Amino acid sequence: MRDALPLGVLVLLLLGAATVLVGVLCLATAGLRGVHRFLHPKPRRRPSTPLVPVPRRYVWLACHTPRCGHLETPHYPAGPGRVACDHCGVVRPAP
Image 1 (cartoon, rainbow, N blue to C red):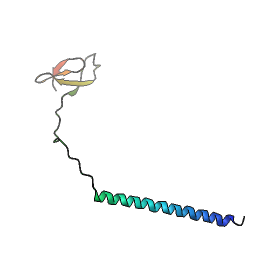
Image 2 (tube, rainbow, N blue to C red):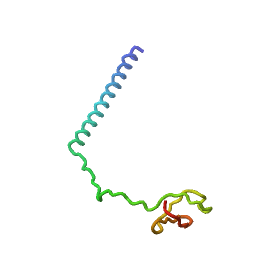
Image 3 (tube, one colour):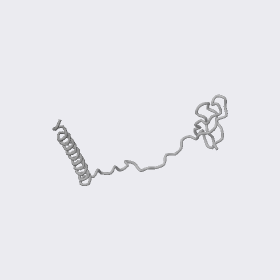
Image 4 (cartoon, helix red, strand yellow):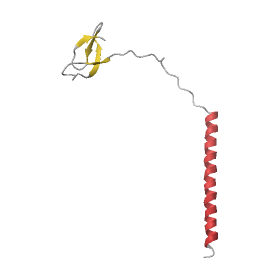
């Protein structure tokens, strides 16, 4: 029973030393990774094609037909100043 207190203190000291050792290893690893990233930066990727805006191929309009349920559906160009519904095929003037 007399040896329990010194044994407990020894276990706590060993756990503390192990915790400090793990902390030092983590800091060393993080430091080495930082140095490696500083010395060997990754090259920046450049876009292979210039970024140009893509033309809109369709517009969302409310199609007031029973087949479309009076909901907004995609309408595609159907000639100058006209658009056609993708679902029911109704052609109407472009907005």
